[in-house]
Image 1 (cartoon, helix red, strand yellow):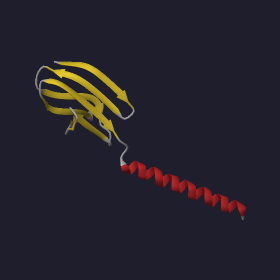
Image 2 (cartoon, one colour):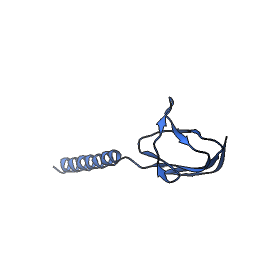
Image 3 (cartoon, rainbow, N blue to C red):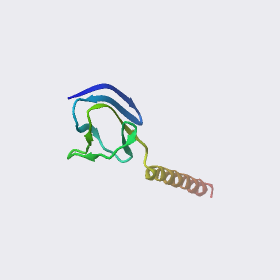
Image 4 (cartoon, rainbow, N blue to C red):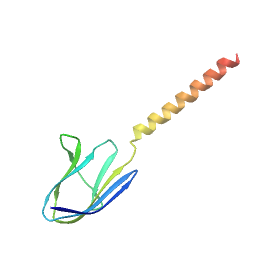
Length: 101
């Protein structure tokens, strides 16, 4: 049995505070996406994905717990955005120079 005490939602964080009456695997109906990290009681935690790509955390002991699911944009997305911006600027400069000739 699990008693959820509070749930907090932000753009980069979902936080759950709850109490377990026995040791169990916690299955979160939260789909994994690259850039997600899971913290249990303030410590980065290993997790696995079920067949629907939902996050599961094994081996939680009875008692009070906090699970934080944090999202940070992967570096590759930042690099892709920078390259897209550079391409757009280069294309605009090329078009501007082509129109002035």
